[in-house]
Amino acid sequence: MIDLFNRLFGKQTSSATAKERLRLVLLSDHLSLAPELVDKLKAELIEVLSRYVEVDRTKIEVNFEQHDSAIAMMANVPILSMHPPKVETPTHPGGGDAPKRPRRRRKRPTATSNPAPAS
Amino acid sequence: MHELKVDPEPAAESPPAKRGKAIVITSGKGGVGKTTTTANLGTALAHRGARVALVDADVGLRNLDIVLGLESRVRYHVLDVLEEKVELQEALVHDKHSENLFLLAAAQSREKDDVDTEAMRELIEELCEQFDYVLIDCPAGIEKGFTNAVVGADEAIVVCTPEVSAVRDVDRVVGLLGNKFRPQLIINRVRPLLVQKGKMLSVEDVNSILRLPLLGVIADEPDVIISTNKGEPVALRADSKTGAAYRAIAARVAGENVPAPTVELEAQGFMAKLGSFFGGRR
Ligand SMILES: Nc1ncnc2c1ncn2[C@@H]1O[C@H](COP(=O)(O)OP(=O)(O)OP(=O)(O)O)[C@@H](O)[C@H]1O
Ligand SMILES: [Mg+2]
Image (tube, rainbow over all chains, first blue to last red; front, side, top):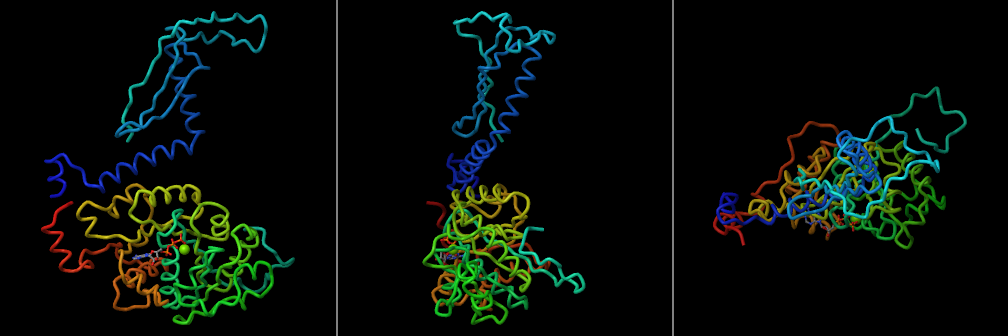
């Protein structure tokens, strides 16, 4: 009955507010307490994206941000080219003769994930 | 299992006596009812015939003796034993209400950092050889006092109140405990009337988040405060609902299959019920 009342008047009980706050705070607690999990997620994210585009691995940012009623994963992934990196291209292991990628100052197009409500 | 002060030849011929179980009562957050729970669960277990030792691990802030009404009987404390100033038997205070109940008090004039973690583990192990249950009253926090309270325990009971901060702290403590202690939950200070009005988290709300085996639910009741004033645990009172709730927890701890824990609105009285019916929310 209280539920119905609140839905009609668009109000939320304080216990519902408490529950919602608790859910969010624990989500972010768990994220901050499991950095290795976030690292793993980041690595796998790169792996998947690299099948489609060439991303700048050094500049990827993955953050979790709290919005009003959700925790969203914000991934900022600079894309170097719209072609997947060639697998056979050896990544220069510190050799001086490795072809240097031209540094572009121009802002790169970025893929930003939509804030998806975390459940 | 652990490196204890093992005799060179463990008595192989005599069959090993059944070792008791050490349970730490913890919460993270302060003031949620750890000491009250320890005293009442210990009392209720002792009344079922089990031999029970209570260890106050809250060094520097000793309280368990007060809740049990034993403050005038305490002569030695846990650090006296750990530092081998007295024998364990001398430091154990016999409870005045329960034949099978003993208390090892905390040192009031010392600090938590004075406790040697390994010595504490050995002490709990020694108590487990003599008692069926060893209940350890953990201090608030997750620092050294927590480590020392937990080190010798086999299992954990976490006490939570229906508040955001308390649930968050329990979640953190359960994370720290890991899988080893199989933590079970007691939700304390529930006010059914407030829950009904949507002003307090319900038992289901709390445990939909924590997802722990629910050992018991205790209402917020003047009973508890009055009993603490007198130094007579409420678990002793046959007429008290709260006492019955603690006895049900003891039965569950002892492995009995008792009905799922609940708190009833009835406890709040007729006027309160009327109020909840007409009053609505504010
Ligand atoms: N179910 C209850 N109903 C009413 N009062 C309660 C209840 N449980 C505990 N209290 C009261 O709350 C206060 C704190 O309880 P207690 O000392 O057991 O908490 P604690 O977790 O051991 O605290 P600390 O973290 O300081 O050691 C006490 O005054 C106690 O009487
Ligand atoms: Mg206490």
